[in-house]
Amino acid sequence: MKNLIRSFLYEINKYIYSGNQFYCNICNKYYRKFFTAGENRRPNARCPGCGAFERHRLMMYFLKDKTDFFSDNLSVLDIAPLQTFHKLFSKMENINYISIDMKLPYVTKRADLTNLPFKDESFDCIICYHVLEHIIDDNNAIREMYRVLKKGGWAIIQSPFDNSLEYSFERQDIITKAERKKFYGQDDHVRIYGRDLIKRIEFSGFVVKEDDFIKKFSDKEIIKFALDKEEIINYCIKP
Ligand SMILES: [Zn+2]
Image 1: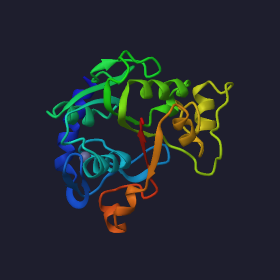
Image 2: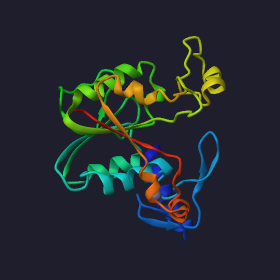
Image 3: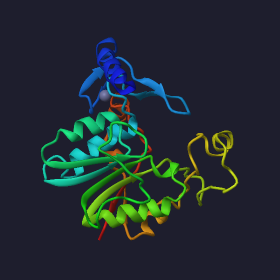
């Protein structure tokens, strides 16, 4: 029901907020404003017509420009996707799309990322956006993604991280929501990743390319498309 109401609100917002200041490449519409969003209240972050954030728009550009996502026949595993992505990708004829989550009601399958119900080498690509920072056993989650990915397949594994930290910060005695909010900045996060995030991903066998794809956009485009000019995409290959 909640999701139906949300979809309905998006449709209304598409009219209320239509304009020409900003462009969302996911719902393919122009708006006069985007919503402020996130714990750090980022202005112009969230699309009123589809709920996408900066990272989702960059991902969409990346998938179109740098991958065969929209042309090849691929089996795709999407972890806890935005509802908009689930809807969009489910309809694509060239991909066999499976989305998973423990709670989200609209996903294809209820599943635990640390114990995936799929055979080895089942997928050509995996999308995992802002998930690992919620998972205590993130090493196992990364290992599972590696296991179910085919050789030569790719994954995009993004998590927020603090560039000023050499090592990720996590403590086993921080368990309440209030403590997590205080130490990790969000009450459902279980750590703050530092610059060792890439090493953690590589530990399972992935080869990670930190792609500065964002640099192809001009300052003007970054504002118009409401992107994060600091975002680096972790494009991970299973060799
Ligand atoms: Zn949108």
